[in-house]
Image (cartoon, rainbow, N blue to C red; front, side, top):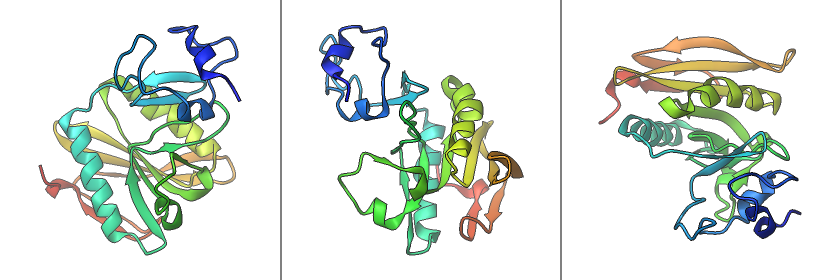
Length: 201
């Protein structure tokens, strides 16, 4: 177990021993110089703390309505949650925009993260500041961890385009199974039907 207080002595550089996934549960409410909620929106990507910028309305709207729709359509043993961490490894703890997870895990209000075995679908809504992470870094890490389904949502002049991927167990990499514009209809991880052109504003 690392000493977070000692680690913050090196701020803004990381400590020599690096950040770990468990450190995120021990970060203080305030920043190193007393900034309120400094560590509120942070994820760990390959041992580096990444601070997420404020959401644009498109981003927030997609998260809200995808989570709501997936919750409504999911079978009883699954549930959709938003902006919760997934602990992928010792130095990898991203915070996806939307997750479909085991309902039993979702019922535990004390959880701060989920494990790949509990996750059935990960969705990232791409923002300008997170393009490389959402398109390259995070999908490859989700695939390596064995998460079967991944969606990437892009903003096309205010309309969502959803790129749907499924894990190839032979290569442990995602394969693109469809690009959806007006309507998203897929059979896995459960039957899903979303009218993308009619998401409320």
